[in-house]
Length: 407
Length: 214
Image (cartoon, rainbow over the protein chains, first blue to last red):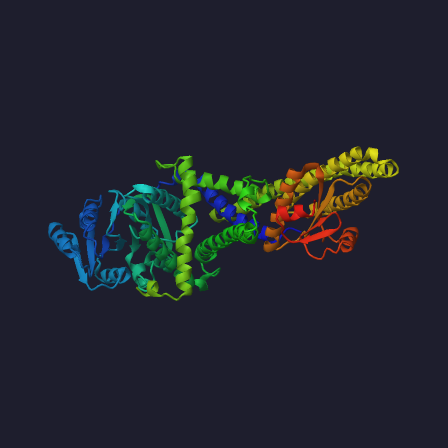
């Protein structure tokens, strides 16, 4: 009989290959319509909410981008929410308010992004509410390509394709690849009504539905994930407009990147926990696919880490237990050999890598970074880095370090 | 209809996994088959050696050189095959057919040992070095066995025809092997049995082993 561990590895490959097949099949059938969007001649009033906390460096460019966006100006307003900034954000916002008639300001004490948005929702005039980060730079036609989806009464939110503005260095370059892969996979999920994140850099919500779900959860560190799940759990649809591009600035230092990803992980886990009762019990794909899929992604990453750790531990223990013999003249390093034996797991691993390569190269089709080397580095170096924030998040949860949950 | 893709992906995944598992089985069967085939050759060699031994028993010691050479060649061949089996054992993840084949080899090794004992009594000037190890080591024992195995391998390279190196897994449930271990008081794995006189338990340096070979 095969060892239990062999079954564990086969189960891991099963889930890994299943999701790759799932994404590739949907892509193969819909690749011609990836950039299609819901066209409309009706342009509802849109309130663009831009929460800002110490954003003096980016706020002006962001507001300028939204002001110059290709959308009827009489059908939009921009609300900057100064969340108790201690720098010149408010001063710049006042200047923009004077300069552009469509800009309004809410100045309040620091209470976090979700609360800032909730306060703005109360005074927003728009039938639709667009939420943007203070370092987001939308393409001119991005908003226009999103509003048409709302002609379907069941659509509660539409999200955009986020790309990286600052692509310099290792982190910049591979976050650019990462954001493209994430956007591509999100668009694929759009075809099965399972867009589970309406991202912070630019997403549009139907105001009535946003108000119905009580706005953004101030206790959740990833209010954009939470609000999407809330909308889905109420039976509404969330969509993605792949041709609506918005650029964002990404962290350029590993520590900043780590903090951002820890927040994403904590928010994800927090949201799964909050909506656990919907597991396999909702009217749409939310309970039957979104929650199991996201939960499984966390679980598989963790099991993958444990398997890798076990492998390393086994190898290391051989050297560790050789220490007494080392002092008697035996040198285990003298007998190091490098060979890749052909085993069942190697075959499955190669198959998984092959399909992963197809997956990534399709996701990066319109990118300048679609070379084999870039994909290999992304898949074998950058993606495994995901484990660092995941483990840090789990450590924080175990230690009951709840700052992230209440901030 | 768009949700049909969940099932299509499932069918494709099962198909791909089946191909992978089938290929895995095929490779493992090929490895086992190779060991089985090699065994046939060694089985004939062993019988040949046994007959030669009867013959050399009644001959005078002038024929010792030839007898030793035959024994040594066989021992070297079976030792190399043992290393291959050991490597295959770590690779096979689906079936345990290989362990059955290994038992046959361990019996051959034991037969070789008995042969070498007789030959040594008759012809003298070489040493029997039997390395008795466990088939089911924990991590700590695995490190110890690895150290001993490599040390003996080096010693064999250094001393060449002066020693016959016979590794035997003592705990495969083979009665003849267990009896042999009992005769030589092997109570601990791994141990090194030198010339059926000395039993060295655990790791020993080449120098310590050599002391018993002179």
